[in-house]
Image (cartoon, rainbow over all chains, first blue to last red; front, side):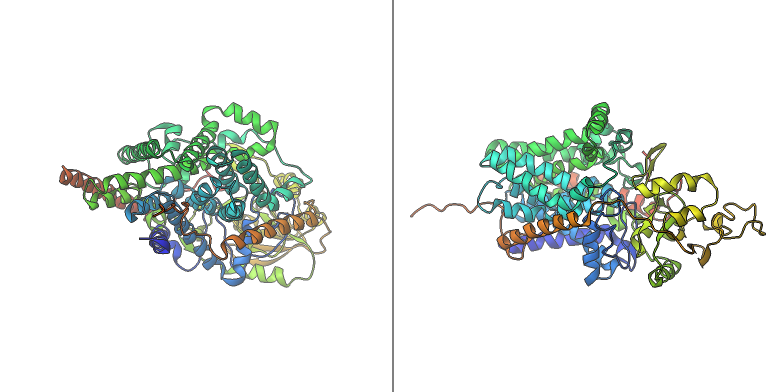
Length: 581
Length: 43
């Protein structure tokens, strides 16, 4: 099968895997899981561009969802992105298998789209990281030829999904591309220089806003242990990383994954894939695949740092805060996942002439059989829900209010376990849901470790909120117009009561005296504070961010002239020379 | 030999799939119990 037909088959397989994995998440509504937050009307707010003084972790992925939100309802945009991840992963991995046969290519595609890495990161809600992961095989192919003609343009296009994903996705893809360019490039120094330049240009939207943030970039080495890989199989943390699992969060391990029997079977599959890859490379000596092996090894070493030498990583983060991007180590096993997928494809290729086709098909389906709990919305853990009606009312009230002022969200924490979301954990969606600047406590708690808040305005308000004293004057001075309480609402119902009223003595009574309760619902309370003061965010200059966006978009547009409209080349392999007659 | 390998692979796949389906069915019946309320996660 040649040309685009084979990509079509891989795309259809990826689409089927996506449908199967998302299951009930494809129903009407939003899938809200940990960092995955989509809202009905995402806006082009200052927060979306990283101009509010917080660290721009959500740049430019929030802008991308806002752009999609212009043409699609928010929930459809979410489902499109999630399905696109599976389709891209399957197509890109299949294209990297050096075989003309369909079964080996699909074996690689299935393995790359359906493995512990995808399952754990999907449950953790890191769709932006998965967007970069899905395109990583294209990045590998293009980085190996970055030194050649049109190499830069193709590399920009291959890195575009990672660029949309933001700093974590681009860190993983950038590291992979740099190692591949250095190890496999035709002209290594030129290829490496070009790759670094491309990664730098695509990083500008978040790099500029993060760098010029007046509060600087925090250096917190204490979080190294919190985000280091953990053992989710009987083979320890490093062994779990080899099996493409080992995510730091024990709550996002797929149900049943890590059972000694299935984990051992998966270990044999991974070792078999690595052996098939090694044997094939020894015979072919193809530099592209040497580059991929080097990138997988480098990624594996980086992923293991937090487990094997946490002191070194802590020291690096304290030396330069930028190294904090290495804290969540497991994400760097992504290039190893590419290698394992290609290796499994090569194993299927080996079996085809020697054993019945049935066996090769079984090899292709092994990842699904060993991780069935990714199916049906990760065994029911990814479900679509609707936002409560009270949230929509609050949004309307705030949008219709002509008085300036920001919104404060209580309780004073970043993550929630709403009853209307099946008690599943999620980053508070209000900052994206409401059409104003929302101040919330972005401190993150993992077990007993707390990574301090990074928003300067939240830091200023934190002590007053936690003191238990009156808040109205403090909030007014900080320019807060609304207070939204979206969890444990019963504890704040008497907050607006005047001092000395019947509610005195009740928890939080009178803390918002003088405020007016506009929305009173089990799921949300919305208080309005009269005559708020003015307070400005100490964010990066908008002009500098604008220049960064113009440069990045300009380079992407220039690159797209290399490929007209498609990211999918007919073949990643150079055309074979025909012998002269 | 080929038939033996095919049978072995088939049995392994079927047992893995059935085990997973049972786990999945059990899990989808329960709401997750998440404590403490406001954490990002637990190790």
